[in-house]
Image (cartoon, rainbow, N blue to C red; front, side, top):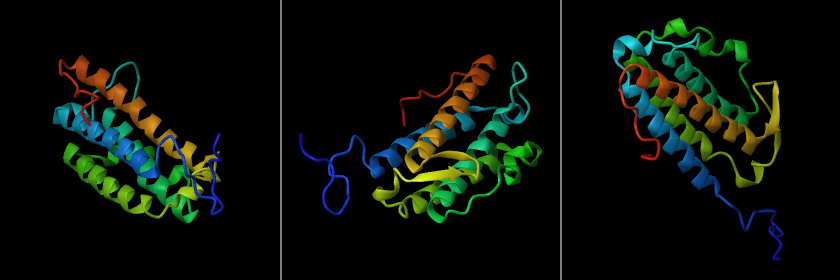
Length: 170
């Protein structure tokens, strides 16, 4: 079997490239954006089931983790979890506000991503000053967390009689 590392310590064979991983994540973000758009304005910040948070509060958490998380990866400077806005979901007044924040976060992700060399993806970090992992495992957590909360949003939409967007149409 061919060695997977060359002398410059760059990966020559990978399952997925950093660019492909970013596109995968941004595909999920496009579906999540469609999910936000599908909510009736009056239910976005008020509807919940079984004691779960509103979808607007969940989306605010996703916004809080994504770009600030990548900024932490790039700079090593992490906000404390208690400083993040999703701890106070009442700040969100409308779906339009969240969509604006979502789009700004998406642009920040694209810009920050360019600053992460492939050689750093297996580097150990402590995300938000408290979660041990690698750059890659942290990014995968951001993606997994988004999928999890989007699925909760799908349940909410179905409970409102609204068909959620197809998850495969990214």
